[in-house]
Length: 225
Image 1 (cartoon, rainbow, N blue to C red):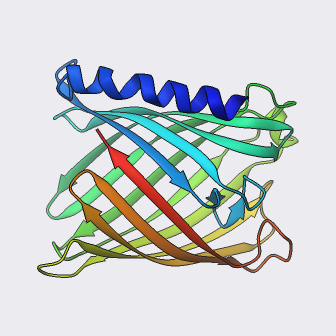
Image 2 (image 1 turned 180 degrees about the horizontal axis):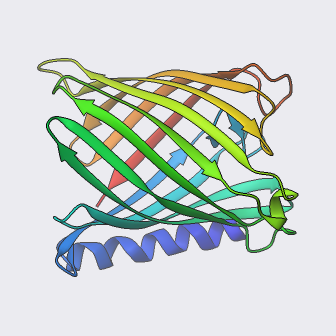
């Protein structure tokens, strides 16, 4: 039922974004809808290795401030069937170095003591055909985290092929704390962009044994409005 409501919500957002001509409050508005064969978050499946429907609404200002909402269907993740993320941050470039920091709230409306928030920050470079960033996400001590904090260190690198709408993505992450005990995750993927559509495939794996964290091939298609 919640998956149907999520799809309906996305269908309502599309014409709203089109009429707004992607401009709101002096910034750029981007609406996205995605279908993925498995919702993997830091290498671990939140959809129990099944298909997930996702969507997002992002707003970017020329000043570097941004905010957004992301929603995804789940399958029995912390007893919840839907996840909603609310986030805001600031991104800027200085002497070729890109800085990005902010905070995000993970909300599981029908979960049991499941919602929590996290701060994040990263630095990176964009060389045109190659961009790369390193960062850290930190969840401070919270009641819903068993009064235990959590650290996640990551590197994301994207390469483009000249003359072709093809990207190659590399990801490496290390997590320790409430959600991971010295957990590593990594992925290698490629995607093709067709105007406002992006189709991708990736290999995802972790050093954790279990159905939700075993290696897998993930397919996804995303549309931007």
